Image (cartoon, rainbow over all chains, first blue to last red; front, side):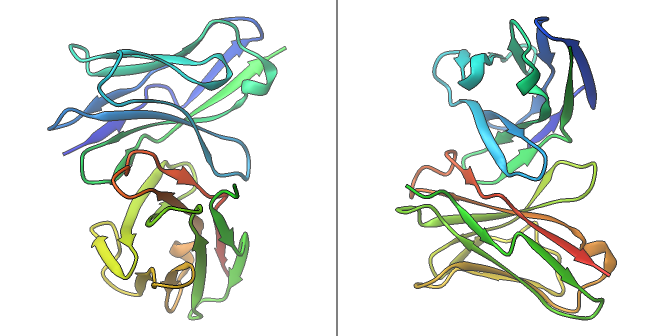
Length: 112
Length: 114
């Protein structure tokens, strides 16, 4: 069975500081992993995805994530936070069938 | 290229009424997925459909909920006899055939049951 754990439901960083959002997964098969961002009252927008190619994945808006099989992790990072990064971030894992399993989300606040 | 369309964006129903949520997938996409997001929670998978077929409905409540994706027209998520606990945001996603991992999400329908 697949599942995702996002550590920290709320994360605050100062503008310009490093953003680190944590995601650990469990999967019975080699996983596909995703990070989505959700702005208030909007749908989910794909930030990046891992589909068994390069373990370091670069996404939109300067975000990247590294797949670490030994740690079953897929943490999301951005070197320098911007005010526009304030949003809800969801990590998701998928097996080969098509169903996505989402974490409970991390709300990112960027402090000026 | 228009994205995934959902309507209505907001829906208010009284307890006992029916709710119909519509989802038009992206052009060229033949797979549709429905998810529910309860307050303070992540998205939970409900059902996965292809045209005229339900592929996986393991996340659907056994009663009152149904989904279809007809040959023509949008996918419909139908909730009969709604209760307060059905209040949530319902998101639809679509993908191309054979690319289930490339799911594109719509803006969601926020259902409020009064």
